[in-house]
Image (cartoon, rainbow, N blue to C red; front, side, top):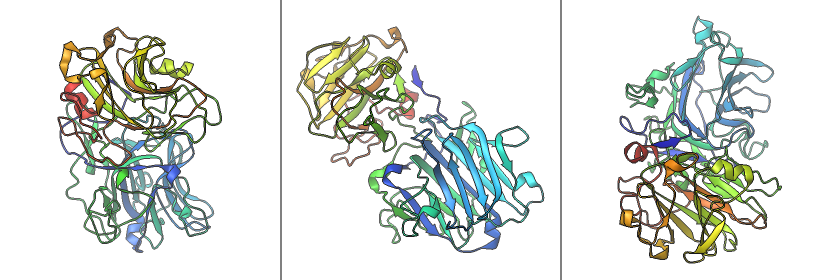
Length: 498
């Protein structure tokens, strides 16, 4: 059995999405383009994409927007600070159309498919603006909205006109227009972005409910038309002349390529709506109240801190496992990592509440910076000390064994492939005998006097990998070789081995 925070992600089968793009609001990441004025396309268009959020309850975060601001018209789809979803058209002085959902989007492990349909020429007011989430249409009749203001008939939106269209931030916050270096920036992952200009396509054009699980999943988008301004972004390296990295390449056939700001090849991710990878869980934040407490960035894969002092509990994975063999890497990013701890824990909520580190409680295990192993707040000799090194964790829940490596060398002469023999292993309590019935990868620090940031790699890294190693099924990208029989922590592997 595998425990996953509820996430709308099908584990295997069907149409595969290869890439997403990781947006880090702190780095001012976004795409922009200026569109061509086509009146019919201002009245009718569809935007569909899959998103996985990173920051919850932290300011307005834009998925897509259009308009130049400065008192002109604006269009935006964004998550509010309350975590509701809002879609609006503002004419510069008042709202022409405004939808705010009662639904709150607070699961940082979930992929959501959001489809907005605009058809202002429609004679039926309720069909001039339609919003679907994971294949289900939200309606005013079903009380799905806290605010529901319909578009006037034949209203012209500032989309598919000669103004900016932007993904990842508000278009009126574009650098160079005097309004700053980005506004309402998105933090998280976006995949399969479509804008079908001149077409009112409902959600079933982009996805379907799986007949076995009932989970909403993407489908092959064959048969779509894109009009003059339409785009499709697969975030793959197409090597177009307009954008050498290919991340902003329009693959609809229109070649309406977008200009990339602060996004590079390392932001391309294999964490997608068809193969969901673990990240650190922002819903279990450290309770440490110091102003210099650590934060999560880069799609919840970077534990960030800029000054000394911080929490003892730093974070745990969104996915917990109770069987199978799993591998992850954690790269310490500073040379003065004094009290850092990498490990696994059966009850990370307890660590978070009490601000403690992996290895502090029973059924909690850590590899400390000084080379000792810890469990039950008791340390003993284990391996080499480490500072700004990469620590690999091989978790064998079929044999209840745990192994740690430093820069690819397993400590204590450990051999993760020895099964029940457990050569050099740390023996751990069976997951079934723990509070949660599962183990989570976890990070921490034995002292609040130092800062110990990490880059986390569950298979979709945020830093460049010099060698590149996948697991036995071809998933993940790791710095060091994945032990035979161990797998990256993602939903396709969980379906087979979890």
